[in-house]
Image (cartoon, rainbow, N blue to C red; front, side, top):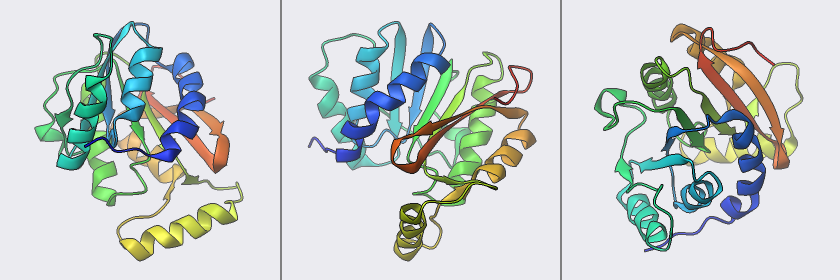
Length: 205
C-alpha cells in the first residue's frame, strides 16, 4: 500500500530548507498532489508547529499517504483529503496559512494549474500566506537544461496535455487572481521553487 518515490528522498531536505524561510510560524499547510505521502511525513516532522494537510485526487495515492501516516508519531499530520486541483470549488478545506505543491504543474493538464491558482487565491487571500510551487520550469532569458528539454518531450509523449510550464505564464495567471511572485529559489537537479503571495504581501526577489 505504501508507495515510494526516489526523488522524494533526494529533494526533501533542500525543499525543507526553503520552506523554513517561506512558511509561516503557525497554521495549516495544505499540500496539494501529495503523491506517495513521503514529503508530508518528512515536512510534518520538520515543522512541528504547523498542521500538515496532505491531499491528492488519486485513490492509490491517498492509500499510500495514509499508510505512511500510520508510522508517524507526531500529532500534526492530518488524514489525507481527496482534492482535485482543477476543481477548486470542491476543495474540502475552508482556509490555509500556506499551500505547497510539488511536481504537479508539469504532470497534469493546464486546467489543474488554473484551478490551483484560483483556489490558492481564495484560501490565502485572508492570511497572506504563500503558494509554493516546486519543479522544473521554463524561464525567459534562462537556458533550459537539456535534461529538462528531454523530460518535457517525454511528458508530452505520455500525455500531450502535460509538459513544462513557463514561469512567466504562472506570473500572469497569478496576477489575474490578485497574487504576485515574491521569490524564486534555485534548487538541485535543474528545479526551482516559485513563491506567490496575495498582492501586497511582498515584492519579487
